[in-house]
Image (tube, rainbow, N blue to C red; front, side, top):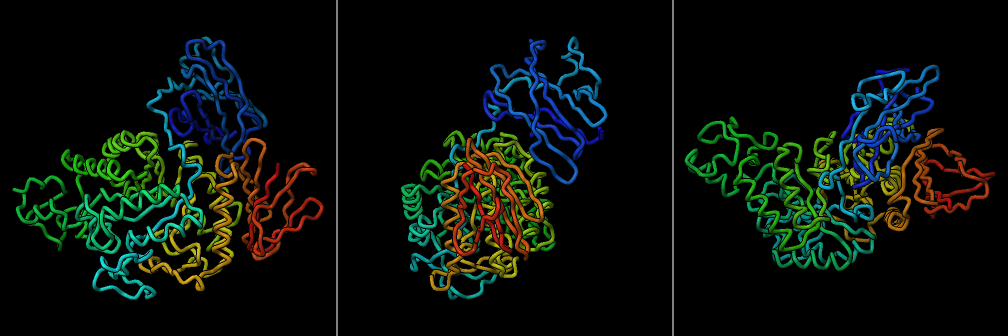
Length: 577
């Protein structure tokens, strides 16, 4: 066997507490290398009463197989090792290495251990995340509900956006369109920043305690939160704590007084007087009007945490999306989590991390992150067609094994956002590819999130093209696409297997096949992203009751001798009971 490929790391995503008495343990081996793996575990202080359970191969990627065993424990102080059987050899994998036989009389020197599941250490995502269906709104471009607070230099709503153009979207506009959102079926709103800022995107905050005047005021925001909650819709705000505007009062004071300013340590100043060219202070990227905040400074932390308390306690918001979260120190985020969860235990914390975010997702900082790696895989498979179904599923497997199960259940999954080109644009306007990607998104583990307008066929290149005004002329909408999204959302909210089920992949013949199972229900998600019709044979008993959940002209299914015809560029959900 390939011993170099075998790996397990205690107290990590390989061995994590899923609950106060539940532990999930994983092992990695080389692909197709092991015939059988057993987990041997016992209470550290009573080792000779150990138990043995088989491990199940749950996922496979390009190089590795991944095995998992889920343990229900009455005493969580356990030691454990793995018995691995290959084609020509068998051995034990322990913390002390590979052994022919495990030395029970010296067990404490050799077993892996999970010392104890402390209640405070269990990573708990909010209980509602499995039922969540989110919608992201770029506030300035959704709807102008109050022309009285609009900027004077508005451009026509249907015009092409430019980096600094204003369209007049505001909070009243979202409030007026809540019925549309409820009709679509979403139950969570993620709003781009709403605090005082000179830009249209508001990622350069001037005052963290004030609503931007072009967006409305606190009264309308409070009404938006209340009315949203009445409709069962949660509100998530975008927090920009990595940097601020150069018009932020403390930074202006530093510009005026230099090192004599009491705020000089709120920022990272290299020299005085402040200079934009050359830039002699740290900023987001190298953008001079976005100076970076020193989040290790006690006064900065107090200001920002008091800001968090204010918006949560006064307006009862349901969580935060954290901009540029991977550039802020971990100590800040640990205190941030304690602050947020102390106010509202089921509030959600979602980081903006574009890469491997494991250090932030160990239960002491974020609940999840925006799942950009899945977005990239979706672009490569569905939109660009540069990988096939097998490569797609292997990429997903690798990503799923990065994190604990409860993290995967809370990840914010999306096809496009204000920071990417529109997915339909990436598809070169091929609606079928977008529909296939959406069929995947709403059946995959985690929280599905739709960027405003994707559901009606909005397209556009990278910023500012992806930030057009929402087209409220219904005759302009792609009605087929809109109805498809409504159906997907309805199915997602109704089917327990898609919200709570296990996940496995079974792609073949360049069909992407994903299986979601919960109790006695199973749903096969079958996606044909090729230009050829294909056949799928349901791997269930012949007398199984099968219901195809995606109905309509776009999904034509014919059952012939236990097989289903999957037309080119189409998808289906096959539910067996």
